[in-house]
Image (tube, rainbow, N blue to C red; front, side, top):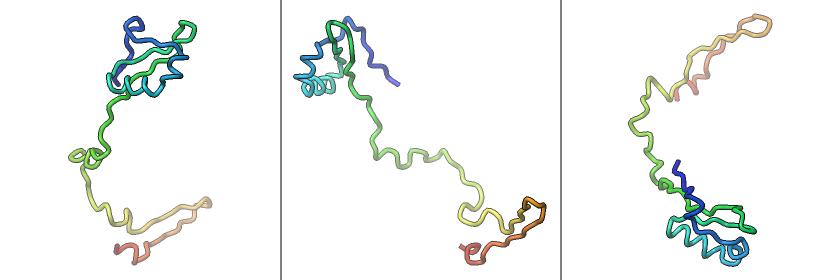
Length: 104
């Protein structure tokens, strides 16, 4: 993660009343210049307006894992052909998959 925190002494600072009156302009300036602005109240820092982090384009997520995954075996067919379950009273239940499902 990139830190946008700059020394408070070198950062532009404006009082909260001026920020309230010019909020949209301040936000646009921070985005355009990449320089944070310190908001103060009675001379004390209360907030920092920092530029947004750069994010990967949404179109880049497709294929992002290409070459990083290896598939073994049949991922479409059933995991097991027959299934044996043990119930709470230790009796066995044998189940066979429905032929329609098994042939998908």
